[in-house]
Length: 447
Ligand code: CTP
Image 1: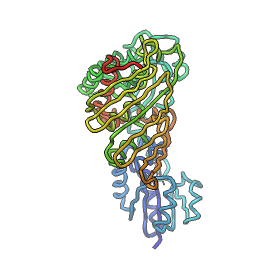
Image 2: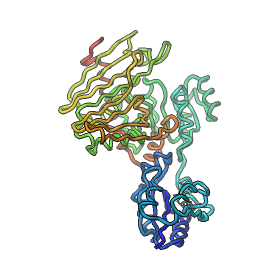
Image 3: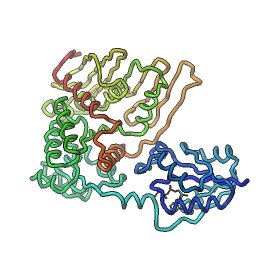
Image 4: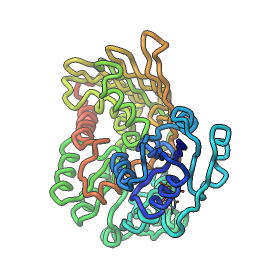
């Protein structure tokens, strides 16, 4: 019996896929089709796949050509599969000509003619509206947004708003978008959604105004500095069928999602302690050191540093306290301890004190270690008492990492999903609550 194997994503299954599968089947007696897993696609930068792995497997099955379907989950798997299934022929479309010659060592490699004029990418682009986005704020963070948005389908940055005319026009020239400075209403009128990357204290009024005229909002961290304000914005968005997402970028990055799913599935037992740390030294004059602009380590970094705590231990904390080193009215270092009925946790944040910047999640069976900078997660290790059971995980963290949150934002708008399991509204509100308690100096100790 001649065995043939072929691989693909098979998103929005189309005629090109069907032709390819038919031709591959004709090469032998038994066809194995490898369908990429969702995480494998994400890991290799294919962020826009519409159908999930179950839907894609089902679509391939329905063509009737596959005798067996396997999931492709890692680089190098093709060699393993060819040997494991005793494959005679590896077949793939001619767009890959030459790229799989290395498999000749294990079986015959055949490049089959590709069907012209159709691809999943084309179908994704045709079936999707392009949302026009305006950026609010033109500083450091906003500048990273435009190149990152370019790698996500379905979104186009068309304008920038900044009350500082010079800054808006420099940004507009750099990225080829339209600048607005005098009228926020005119700016809003032309867009479907906004990305807020302005100073902290302006997030709430900008988000509220944008939502009130029916615009979807992606807002930089911290969404607001108050539980009530965050909750009010989420309630308003929900009641008006609008997407409001806090751009807590780590929450959406593939490796961090993998950490949370591993922990939730019990690989380290019950979580008893989460220790996260983040420090980014700054020097005056800068907004981060300015009390009037809500500077300080907590306002600046709590959203990301508290994320793993809230994600893994939940929003039902029982107590917390803050220990801060203060200079000129802002905390240059804060350690926040958050306690739960059966677990404890701490986050250390610095803008004038340097810390290690790693994340350690300790459980009753083992722990997960994520080295600094854990918030740009590209590697982590699950460790046990018996070190032979340790497992290392590697991921790519593409670009500035904003593409993952932008992708989630677009996908929520398209599918009219108001909530993201990657960052639930109650989790975002809980983080605002802790920041607010800090600013109110509840259980606060100065070092
Ligand atoms: N294929 C083909 N003809 C097409 C499109 C795809 O023969 N018009 C083949 C590919 O060469 C590959 C298989 O179908 O062997 C699965 O490809 P996949 O990457 O899933 O499909 P694409 O439509 O190329 O997807 P994308 O646009 O996301 O790259």
